[in-house]
Length: 246
Image (cartoon, rainbow, N blue to C red; front, side):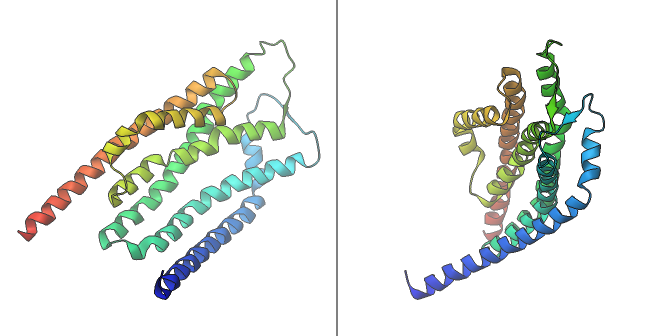
């Protein structure tokens, strides 16, 4: 590797380091802001619970507050992190690719919120109700604050990240890194991976696994469909460009 290439690699690493520091700075600021309102958020989340949450130690509530503030900070930081990533890859993109990549930033944020909302308002109540029904009033129900919110986190945050799959697939398709034919070819491997993910993020019962697996598989199929749309549009644009040069 030449000295010029070494300098280029060092400059890229320095630029990446700068972008990461900026992202961490945004995250820290939003984390501190979230801590200012974390008690209000906590009260909102436990307001309608039909049972009381218990504390086993003085540090439990601090852990829960930190967990809530971290999720809020991640959601708030996501658009800024996406923009910093766009700035990092911007020099390597064409003018059209820059516009395309920039358009995906709000989509990533909205899909993250959509995934969190799906987990919190739909999936979490269903799974919790099913698990509580297993006791059939044979046991005294006692939830600790830490375990309840850890369970809530497992039912929401992964979906916030996984719901971004369609936007990521569309973006990578528009850049030419993947295409719908590849996604279809690896479908069975993707299904297997998504099933493993659903088992890891859910409680150890069959119903929870099914309720999580089905949306993930539908997300993958939706990603293939959206990839086809982007891919066809890209082929049409390429054909029009080639025709204009003739």
